[in-house]
Length: 171
View 1 (tube, rainbow, N blue to C red):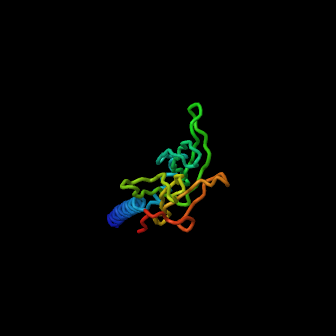
View 2: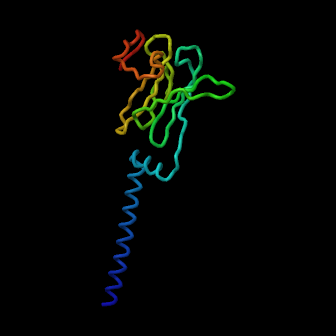
View 3: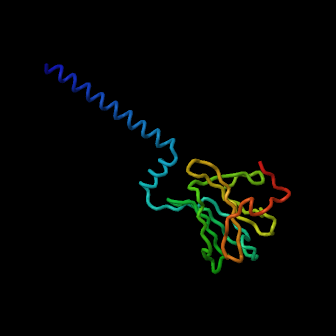
Protein backbone atom coordinates (compact mmCIF):
# COMPACT_ATOMS: atom_id res chain seq x y z
CA UNK A 1 0.00 0.00 0.00
CA UNK A 2 2.85 2.33 0.78
CA UNK A 3 4.39 1.59 -2.57
CA UNK A 4 1.11 2.56 -4.34
CA UNK A 5 0.86 5.79 -2.34
CA UNK A 6 4.41 6.69 -3.27
CA UNK A 7 3.71 5.89 -6.91
CA UNK A 8 0.49 7.98 -6.87
CA UNK A 9 2.27 10.90 -5.19
CA UNK A 10 5.06 10.69 -7.75
CA UNK A 11 2.57 10.69 -10.65
CA UNK A 12 0.66 13.56 -9.06
CA UNK A 13 3.85 15.62 -8.77
CA UNK A 14 4.71 14.94 -12.40
CA UNK A 15 1.18 15.80 -13.50
CA UNK A 16 1.26 19.07 -11.54
CA UNK A 17 4.64 19.97 -13.05
CA UNK A 18 3.35 19.28 -16.56
CA UNK A 19 0.21 21.34 -15.92
CA UNK A 20 2.30 24.22 -14.55
CA UNK A 21 4.59 24.07 -17.58
CA UNK A 22 1.62 24.11 -19.99
CA UNK A 23 0.03 27.04 -18.13
CA UNK A 24 3.27 29.06 -18.21
CA UNK A 25 3.82 28.23 -21.87
CA UNK A 26 0.25 29.29 -22.74
CA UNK A 27 0.60 32.55 -20.80
CA UNK A 28 3.90 33.27 -22.55
CA UNK A 29 2.43 32.65 -26.00
CA UNK A 30 -0.62 34.82 -25.28
CA UNK A 31 1.62 37.59 -23.96
CA UNK A 32 3.87 37.50 -27.01
CA UNK A 33 1.07 37.61 -29.57
CA UNK A 34 -1.45 39.91 -27.85
CA UNK A 35 -0.22 43.50 -28.15
CA UNK A 36 -2.32 45.04 -25.38
CA UNK A 37 -1.33 42.39 -22.82
CA UNK A 38 2.33 42.70 -23.78
CA UNK A 39 2.26 46.51 -23.48
CA UNK A 40 0.40 46.40 -20.17
CA UNK A 41 2.91 43.95 -18.71
CA UNK A 42 5.79 46.03 -20.00
CA UNK A 43 4.38 49.23 -18.50
CA UNK A 44 3.64 47.45 -15.21
CA UNK A 45 7.24 46.35 -14.77
CA UNK A 46 8.86 49.50 -16.13
CA UNK A 47 8.67 52.99 -14.74
CA UNK A 48 7.24 56.02 -16.46
CA UNK A 49 8.72 56.28 -19.92
CA UNK A 50 8.71 58.69 -22.79
CA UNK A 51 9.96 57.64 -26.18
CA UNK A 52 10.51 60.09 -29.03
CA UNK A 53 9.25 58.31 -32.14
CA UNK A 54 9.87 60.94 -34.79
CA UNK A 55 10.87 64.58 -35.28
CA UNK A 56 10.18 66.94 -38.19
CA UNK A 57 10.84 70.66 -38.54
CA UNK A 58 8.78 73.11 -40.58
CA UNK A 59 6.63 76.23 -40.63
CA UNK A 60 3.45 74.62 -39.27
CA UNK A 61 1.98 77.91 -38.00
CA UNK A 62 2.46 79.89 -41.21
CA UNK A 63 4.46 82.63 -39.49
CA UNK A 64 7.76 82.02 -41.26
CA UNK A 65 9.51 80.32 -38.35
CA UNK A 66 10.50 76.68 -38.23
CA UNK A 67 8.81 74.81 -35.40
CA UNK A 68 9.91 71.38 -34.21
CA UNK A 69 7.14 68.76 -34.28
CA UNK A 70 7.78 65.69 -32.14
CA UNK A 71 5.77 62.45 -31.98
CA UNK A 72 6.06 60.91 -28.51
CA UNK A 73 4.89 57.58 -27.07
CA UNK A 74 4.24 57.68 -23.33
CA UNK A 75 3.04 54.93 -21.02
CA UNK A 76 -0.59 55.94 -21.53
CA UNK A 77 -0.81 57.81 -24.82
CA UNK A 78 0.52 58.95 -28.15
CA UNK A 79 1.30 62.68 -28.34
CA UNK A 80 2.31 65.34 -30.84
CA UNK A 81 4.36 68.15 -29.30
CA UNK A 82 5.08 71.42 -31.10
CA UNK A 83 8.09 73.50 -30.02
CA UNK A 84 8.93 77.05 -31.17
CA UNK A 85 12.13 78.20 -32.87
CA UNK A 86 15.15 77.99 -30.57
CA UNK A 87 16.06 80.99 -28.44
CA UNK A 88 19.47 80.74 -26.79
CA UNK A 89 19.58 77.06 -27.75
CA UNK A 90 16.32 76.14 -25.98
CA UNK A 91 12.90 75.49 -27.47
CA UNK A 92 9.65 76.26 -25.68
CA UNK A 93 6.73 73.81 -25.78
CA UNK A 94 3.87 75.56 -27.56
CA UNK A 95 1.23 72.87 -27.99
CA UNK A 96 0.58 69.25 -27.06
CA UNK A 97 -1.90 67.24 -29.10
CA UNK A 98 -3.12 63.91 -27.76
CA UNK A 99 -3.86 61.36 -30.46
CA UNK A 100 -6.95 59.29 -29.64
CA UNK A 101 -5.28 56.01 -30.62
CA UNK A 102 -2.71 54.26 -28.41
CA UNK A 103 -0.39 52.78 -31.08
CA UNK A 104 2.06 54.40 -33.47
CA UNK A 105 1.57 53.85 -37.18
CA UNK A 106 3.32 54.34 -40.51
CA UNK A 107 2.10 55.32 -43.96
CA UNK A 108 3.67 55.96 -47.35
CA UNK A 109 4.18 59.55 -48.46
CA UNK A 110 6.04 60.38 -51.66
CA UNK A 111 7.47 56.85 -51.83
CA UNK A 112 8.79 56.71 -48.26
CA UNK A 113 7.37 55.14 -45.11
CA UNK A 114 6.97 57.62 -42.26
CA UNK A 115 5.20 57.95 -38.93
CA UNK A 116 5.19 61.77 -38.90
CA UNK A 117 5.12 64.18 -41.83
CA UNK A 118 4.52 67.80 -42.75
CA UNK A 119 2.60 68.33 -45.98
CA UNK A 120 0.27 71.03 -47.30
CA UNK A 121 -2.87 68.90 -47.56
CA UNK A 122 -5.36 71.68 -48.31
CA UNK A 123 -3.13 73.88 -50.54
CA UNK A 124 -3.37 76.91 -48.26
CA UNK A 125 0.39 77.49 -48.28
CA UNK A 126 0.91 76.20 -44.73
CA UNK A 127 2.08 72.66 -44.04
CA UNK A 128 -0.19 70.42 -41.98
CA UNK A 129 0.90 67.79 -39.45
CA UNK A 130 0.20 64.19 -40.51
CA UNK A 131 0.50 61.50 -37.84
CA UNK A 132 -0.72 57.94 -38.52
CA UNK A 133 -1.85 55.73 -35.64
CA UNK A 134 -3.62 52.47 -34.81
CA UNK A 135 -6.51 52.08 -32.39
CA UNK A 136 -6.85 49.24 -29.86
CA UNK A 137 -8.24 46.95 -32.61
CA UNK A 138 -5.24 47.80 -34.84
CA UNK A 139 -7.40 49.78 -37.27
CA UNK A 140 -5.30 52.45 -38.99
CA UNK A 141 -6.13 56.16 -38.70
CA UNK A 142 -4.49 59.14 -40.40
CA UNK A 143 -4.55 62.13 -38.05
CA UNK A 144 -4.12 65.51 -39.75
CA UNK A 145 -3.79 68.78 -37.82
CA UNK A 146 -3.55 72.36 -39.00
CA UNK A 147 -2.86 75.57 -37.14
CA UNK A 148 -5.87 77.85 -36.65
CA UNK A 149 -4.53 81.40 -36.10
CA UNK A 150 -7.89 82.63 -34.75
CA UNK A 151 -8.00 79.95 -32.05
CA UNK A 152 -4.19 80.00 -31.70
CA UNK A 153 -4.07 76.22 -31.55
CA UNK A 154 -3.92 73.16 -33.77
CA UNK A 155 -7.19 71.57 -34.85
CA UNK A 156 -7.84 68.20 -36.50
CA UNK A 157 -8.99 68.36 -40.10
CA UNK A 158 -10.86 65.79 -42.13
CA UNK A 159 -11.64 65.43 -45.82
CA UNK A 160 -15.06 66.95 -45.05
CA UNK A 161 -13.36 70.14 -43.79
CA UNK A 162 -11.42 70.84 -46.96
CA UNK A 163 -11.74 69.82 -50.62
CA UNK A 164 -9.02 67.53 -51.89
CA UNK A 165 -6.48 69.16 -54.18
CA UNK A 166 -6.20 68.10 -57.82
CA UNK A 167 -3.17 65.90 -57.21
CA UNK A 168 -4.77 63.97 -54.34
CA UNK A 169 -5.58 60.36 -55.02
CA UNK A 170 -8.06 58.58 -52.77
CA UNK A 171 -7.72 54.80 -52.66
